[in-house]
Length: 205
Length: 205
DNA sequence: AGGTTGAGCGTACATTTGTACGCTAATTTA
DNA sequence: TAAATTAGCGTACAAATGTACGCTCAACCT
Image (cartoon, rainbow over all chains, first blue to last red; front, side, top):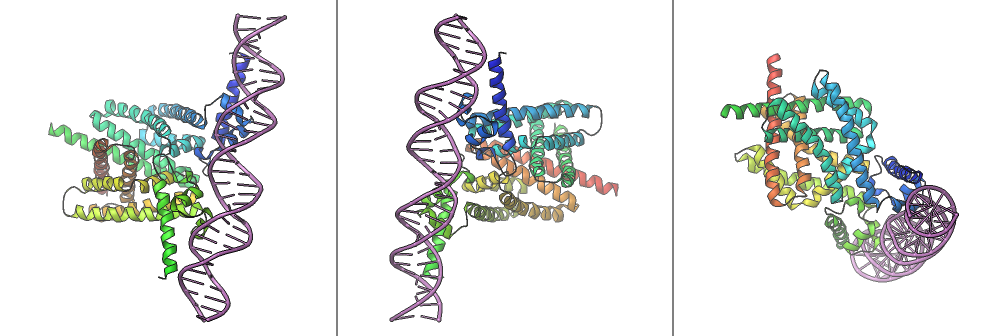
């Protein structure tokens, strides 16, 4: 890559990072202005357009990038689970860790999921869908579920996890412990319930 | 109530209604400006301050009012359930109906739940908490659950329902049918799983 | 009846925003 | 080496926003 393209990439990163850094509990992506982001990135407002068509395009980039980060981290966590122990427990613990080290990635996903732009909502949904289908396939193979049931189960699990994540963002470390415990309990409920429903169906056939 | 206070109340209502009417899939509360709301309500921007300290105060009013509306409608639905039939099925159907007739109430609750103002998040959480604890008490008595388990179960149910609501907002009527079916399946999973966990605990004791 | 209150208005202003336009200077290409 | 490309800048402007201030006049109180 030439010197020129390299510098451009660097500035682009500065923009994305600037935007992520400005996110907080009090500041959502849609409340950021193009000028603010440019200022934080150390470039002139008008230079922003050399990299993104508008703020929307930047936001979508962030969603995609954030989703990728998340999936990579969760995958690493799953490897830990393969060493043995409760899959649910380990996954929840991993999730909390990921959330703690990337709060702003979660913020944008959680907020824009119910946001004002259809493109954003779709992008977030796509990211969540990754999690769901990955999990559904796993369950279908592992626990011999009907595809339909596996899907419903996976979706329920993911929703519960993400929701807990939203609550966790506002919490202190100590409170998070209790949250994680309750989440584990809820996930077990779903898993147990799905198993029972599956068996009932099998018996009927 | 005097003529004066009556007129004031009328204008206040106009403001609240104006704000609710401006909400849509593309427009969140936090993207509304004081001036827009005043314009829609037919008053001068500066007159807004005769009724609310700022937009935040208006928003909190809307959350409270919306939550109340929701609970009232769900209560009515529950009476229908007492006539017999599956509690889960009837509740879900009621919920979908409520959602269809008050989409904007849901929009503000769902969006501000992950919103940018702590006061808003707390207000929404309070509303959701109403649902959860009402349901937890019901389950605790009806199905003889441990308080802890009843709480976890109720919370899981409510979260799944609200989440489905968020998806439903973007859907056509026909798609909603499938969503409702899957939601029912998920709720049964949770209920069945909670029952199984409860029995396991009872046996151990 | 006469004084007080307060809802609603119009004017005004400082800020902030997105973005159009044209320049510069360094890199890339030919 | 000469020409072309382009990242980044500064200037500029129209639009919109929140809100301070002071006025009016109908309703209210005594």
